[in-house]
Image 1 (cartoon, helix red, strand yellow):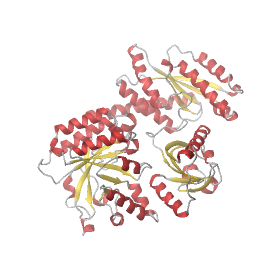
Image 2 (tube, helix red, strand yellow):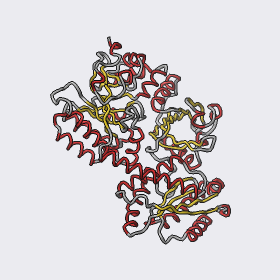
Image 3 (cartoon, one colour):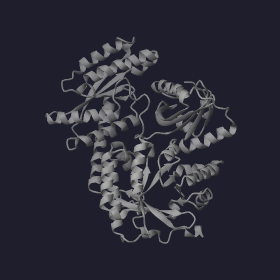
Image 4 (cartoon, one colour):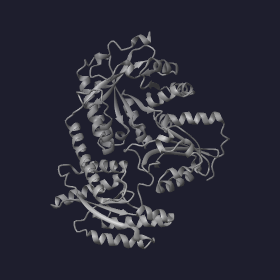
Length: 551
């Protein structure tokens, strides 16, 4: 398919693209058809270790490790036929040699490829080259290994994870052409998979290190000989390779269910790949992997206890009518430390999302808010509260069933509860999500789409999902105030929402200047520390702090 005809890029169009890109990304590159960097904006040196001047004129692929570079160039070629790239993941190779996980979105315009980058969290999509030649990624490895660990425990055996280091592997691959390098990885993969329990429990831990669920009868000497043989069969120069092995016991999970064991391993191995393992010293690698697995399983135990025993509390933050200065509703925010009520719950929520427990926590949070509501007069219609729902949870049937059962048990919450969909970037089946949203709305529960403007797909979500409110992400609000054309951008966004019959909330309004800015841009409601920090007591916002700003 040929690339659609696009008119030449004007300076105005490029400025507009830069402004839009920075609502999502931290860094912007402009590449020519060969992938050479023509222009960059943002904290280039902080991301890459090189100055903007050093990067200009270089191939963008040179900023990536070899495997990612090959995958990225293929992605770039594919993107020319479909114009855009939506949220792929790569690793930047910094000047120090360290790898930095980033998400990229790109767009072809005439003969230029515009690329927006932002930092990637552990929960987000694995990098392009993470799954190599049949080896498992952390998620699928954990799902495969969980039941097998429990089976070994049931037989009275102590499950073990073998750690294999191949010193010199990266040097060997760099001497080979692409076909030979891929053949080497395929051979290693086949050998390790065949040796692992079940024939499908091997995972890549680092550039020169691998892990597998060890069969109790595994002979490391025989494994080493097999690895040497299969690598030598497809590539010369294997005399520089050195193979070493060790094992770590996985007997730290006997008290966990199979499901929680799988979640803990998934979380821990995701942390292993996020932190990055360099070299092939199996002793240090095994210590690091064992520490992260032990910590991951401990975190799962603690979070399971938090959910089952409701060891968290609800803090309220007001959403304020921008014209009248009246509280429209409160957002219910979860907090986990009574002594530090202002501490962010971010690490716990990320843990829940990365381990697949967030849907259970979302049900517990909804029940907690309804319990809080019951302590207020049922006939008092002054207050309404918005409850967050992770984009992960909507796709879990157990969550949907449990939430609707909870609402049926408490019909008096109709018109008094709202639902705020967070982490919308996790949503894949827009049609199913819209069905879920309309079920809530038909029962008189308003729905808000959170994080608007923070992701490249925000407008696609707004087009596909019929909601009552969108909350404009605080980063987008801040960027709009900094950019020369930010006021026009934010005003256009609120006007679009108004025409769609959708109200807007501006987030992180923490100063009188921010309030004046978003008011001028046409936002309907505001939320931020300007009106007080989250509190367990709704009465703390009577009278509303800084009410004089509305007079």
